[in-house]
Length: 108
Length: 121
Image (cartoon, rainbow over all chains, first blue to last red; front, side):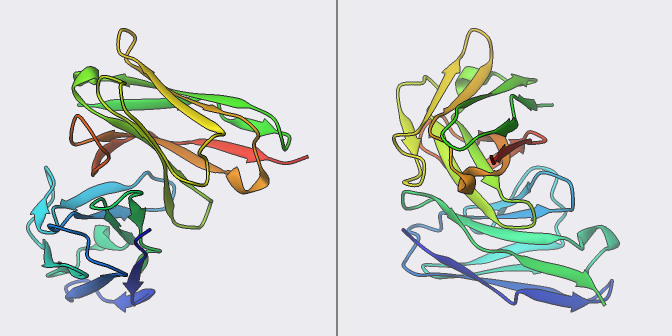
């Protein structure tokens, strides 16, 4: 199965700063079959991105995704207070689909 | 708006069985594939099982294959997960999730609130 490794494990930033989250796959995930999710404590995950770079419905444009093959990035251009959460990448190009271990974006 | 409501979680002994259900509303249930995803409290996400919109195709993680069975009743807008031969490592919050597509397992745009399954003697 494809292993997704997210870095860094924790990102300490202030509101207004730019966040750059990385997701690296152990092998190519095909034609950008990669998604990103946000999860806050006590809540279910929320889909942010599909197809590596397509924002899900209702997701603000400060969130952007990029990458292909084995290296993917989620960027939050200017952090808002509500963006502090854990972020997971997910690949669905190869069965079984798998998730990364998560990156926590915490307030500095 | 789509809503998913899981039920059926609880405490079960190792080797026991449990059946989870997910009631769906707010969307055309039989147009979309569905999945179960689990999460050990404080840990990451693990996809468990998926089913196509028609129910004709099912998919399982190796960790549950042969022990769990996913099914759906499109007449009742309900997704189920029959879990047998439960192990301590199956302890997790189980989420029901709606897929973006009819077949396969891709991205999940709606999730339930989760139901906790605890396997312990």
